[in-house]
Length: 240
Image 1: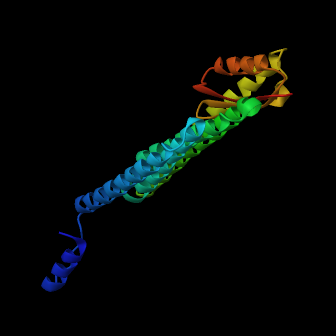
Image 2: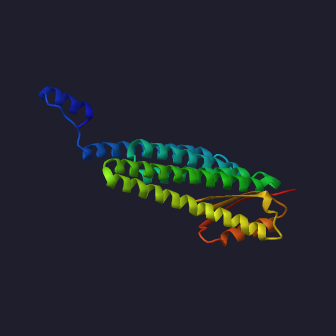
């Protein structure tokens, strides 16, 4: 029974009709499946055209097709599923797909391939962190909305808990960044002033310039040894 038929029946019986949440979700799920299937079909057609190429050109073509599908899937998730976790997952999938495209492009860069790969990795890390940050913002907004339903001391306590949790996360990242910088400064073989350190959710991102690959590896090793670090993204470039 389609939407037009429902409207016709409602008018004929003079009864106001409002879809239940369950029915609305069913309609959204159907629309999402249709959009997802279209993304899959478009990907198949594009990939088939890639088969006419060879070597890295073919690989790049395929990766670009996958990225286009990831973006189409992400749009479908945001429009029809509207689930915070699914939205974050789909945005990360787009970042991953774009990273694969960048790596395919770097493959033909010759002597510049190393720097190209490092820049691609930094961009990928930033995109993933943006997706996670948006999810945290959405979660905070929901928490604030939940607090608004309360009143008096209960509301005040709810708001205080939310602020405390946010502050604790920010302080933890700040402490990690400070400790990594301190360890770099202590290391005599490293020129710490040329290294930029940023931490998001325990993920340390290193960028800047160092004289050699050995020093870049040493910086990564030191960062990994800091308590609270869950991952190190190396965007350091070798100064020539």
